[in-house]
Length: 178
Image 1: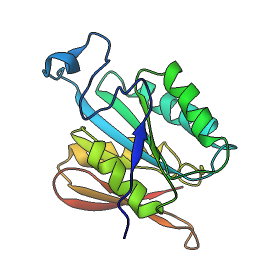
Image 2 (image 1 turned 135 degrees about the vertical axis):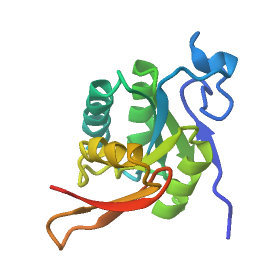
Image 3 (image 1 turned 30 degrees about the horizontal axis):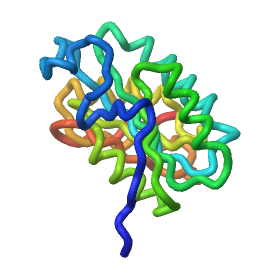
Image 4 (image 1 turned 120 degrees about the vertical axis):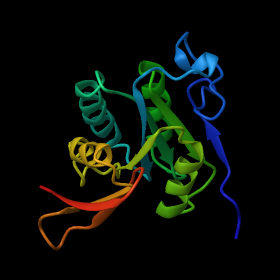
C-alpha cells in the first residue's frame, strides 16, 4: 500500500506546526481559555458543494465562537475537478480553514486518518463535504462531549441514510440528527 502524500494550503499554515499564524494564542503555544474543536471534512470531487459546505460550517462555528475555537481541516482526497483551486481560494478568505491536498485518491478513510493526524483540537468532529450530514449536528455533539462522552455517534433519523461517528473525548453516546 502506498502511503498518502499531501500538500498543505493556507501558506503552509498547518495546524501541526502553526507557522504563519496571525498573532494569537497558538503562536506562543498557549491555548486560549476556549476549547479548540477540529472539524475534519474529507472531500473528493466536491467542486459543486464545497463552498456551500464550508460556508454553512463556518456559520455554525461562528454561532459557537463564544465557547469554542475552531479549525476546519478539509482533506482533498485527490480530486480531479476544481476542488483544489476552490479550497485554496477559500483558505485565503478564512483564518480557521486549512486545506490538505492528497497527491491522489486514497479513499474516504485515508482522508479521515490524514485529517486526524493534523487535528490539534480538544475534540474532533468529522463531516462529509457532500452536504448529506448537517453541520448543525456539531452543536448536539459538542453538548454531549461537554457531558463527558468520548465518542458521539450521530445517525440520521431515516434508516436508509448513512451513519457517522464523531470522535470526541470521554465516554460514548448516540444522538439522532434530522
